[in-house]
Length: 346
DNA sequence: AACGCGGGGGG
DNA sequence: CCCCCAGCGTT
Image (tube, rainbow, N blue to C red):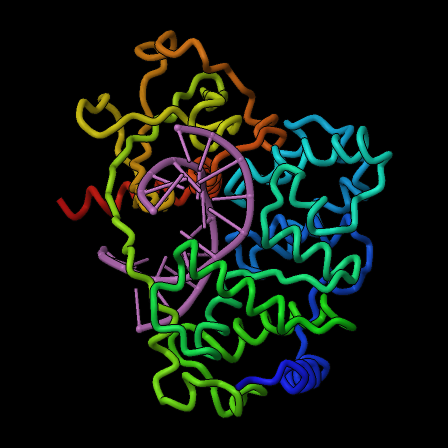
């Protein structure tokens, strides 16, 4: 049997010696902890750090978020992905202002009722910012626990998540719950890694049943496989008088509210100059974008959602990542070089 | 329970 | 290049 008292002691000792220095660990401000946990959903630490600093310098308090416009918030979120996160965070900030008198609730049960906070994020904020002894099971912790308890079934079903939630709740340190949860996550990201876990360095290797049996890297098990599709799109750069044509993505589209160069599926190509493809992933679809430069008179009236935007104003609009990449290539002249290289090959 | 939602990175 | 990673809301 695994003794919670021993696990806590070993894990927290390891954490005190090996914890990562992360910006959101330098504060006890619940707003900052909350913001960081929203940004960290499905997103790596390295990606989040610059967004975290930029966001806080513009919106230092939850009140400033509640009073902000969604366009200003989207601008700081551009490139981070999962744009519904910032919409939900905006709504949650307004609800805290209106229903909680501006004070963030402190329990997991209350937090989970706010938009954008599920079992993980509510547990993380409650334990890290408010010292509540509750679990916060993310993907890293599923991996650690599936190995610790040698869980050989599919680890991503509803029942399995319930199992890990119960295990985590009984393990969590009642004195330092936030540190305990973050220690499990740090362990998962730096020692108990997906493909080559460093069991020799693991503070829990004495307890770990998968380590004892010898094949920890085979856990956790995921039975449902992702299906990948490939699409090719044409990205159109309509130019006239130093201005670009942009369209705003509708609320019902992915990346809603962001601006982009108009896209067309491959097929009937407009005549024009082929430039370089931009590779990009939208969830399980690999998108290759071929930017074109075309005569504006032929297409200008086609899309009444679009508007003429001065290049000077581009930086004030939340742009899709594809658009930012194409724009960067356009600004740096990289497209021109590529064009000649491609023509030379033919 | 299944699906939609981005972007980064490893092999 | 192909594939992996993984919280929350909606259906």
